[in-house]
Length: 371
Image (tube, rainbow, N blue to C red; front, side, top):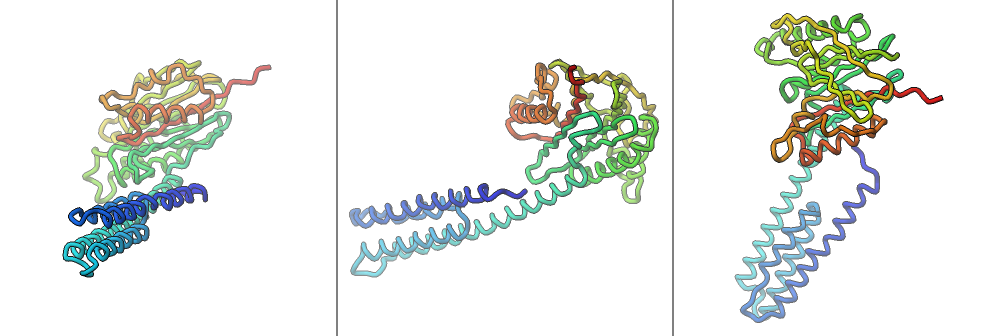
């Protein structure tokens, strides 16, 4: 959140330098108006000076420029009509400048207050994200990991997308998911599932038992008093993985979530589930059987997990982000470097703004050092 001294000084210095523009405009208009023939009146152009100042200055700067414009208009009136202190025309222009200047100062005060409120919201959301969704550790046993959360809303840094990792005696368990819906309800459901996962990931022996426990946890929450109307309407898509420390196949249970992708030597392989289960929270309705499937994850491979905010991101023509096509040929071995390129490519595809939150996780199983 905080910026260094240089980051704060540059905007202030730029604003101070730009104030020369409205001041120069006031001087130029005043001089021309005084020297112009009597039937030419340029005084109304002075309003442009305070009007442009809010684009780079605050209430004080706008007030100073507006005051200078009022003084300039008064001086013009006195110099152009030496026999009369001020004509009715100049009085009307001065009153107009005072009203415009006052309105602009009020606007700047309200704008700064709104900016402070948004900054506070961002601070709170970032604090909540660090608590609910802390970044994955860079090292998960022998695995290397990196995670990235891209929020669709400018004022928020957290939504219904979720992820977590837990170490076991033989490997690492991961979950990535997406809560149906938006707002604080989705955040609450995400926090519930993450809490259940962190508690049970160490205790449940099998992956199927773990997913069944997570489904029951979500269903129990929806049956709380006052939440009956949500039953069957709120659910969480998720993929739960068990990655062994030693070379071996990754176990997976897919609950209606986009499939993982393994990148091997620049060639992506999508690990579609043959027997996907319904999303978490619908177990009481569907009576699912959780099939544990597996796929290879060899040394030197990179495993990519994500939410549908990635694959459903659309460009200006409405075309969804073609994940496998875009990452074909990428050979970044470092997780952070891969996610950095992934983030730039995704934002370039959508023109810089996502319509939905997106989570991206890269897991690398380092190749053994060459003898």
